[in-house]
Structures are given as structure tokens and as C-alpha cells.
Length: 70
Image (cartoon, rainbow, N blue to C red; front, side):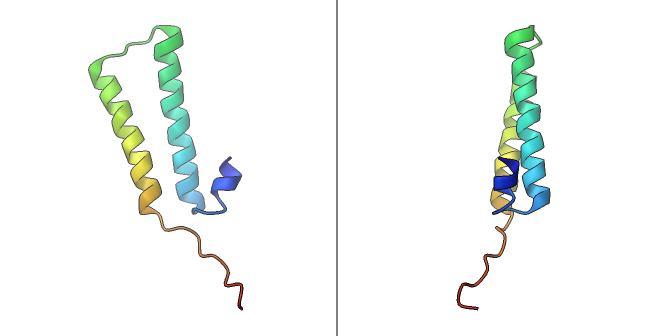
């Protein structure tokens, strides 16, 4: 999926999004399956992280597509 994302967005953005999704997923797995704290502050910060991931994706210009007409 990371390789597919890199065909349309820059490497730095793709990697940051990939890493952020992994971090959020790991934190949620800890809360759901391992009884870690689910305080309001922690959940709010995870929500902020998700918002920043989305904002980073929208703030990055897509890769330039080659001109088929030369």
C-alpha cells in the first residue's frame, strides 16, 4: 500500500502518513486488547494525530504526471 501511495504523493508525505496510521493503530490496539489507559486526553490526542495525518495528505501536492503528448 505504501508503494501504491508513493505513485501519487511524495515519499516524505507517504511515509509520514504510513507511520502515523501505524502509531494510531498500535495505540488503539493497546487500548482495546491490552487494557491500556483510554483517558479523554489520550483519545483527544489520537484524534488530533489523525487530523494532522489527513491535513498532511491534503497539504501535499501530488506528483507531477507525465504529459502523454510529450
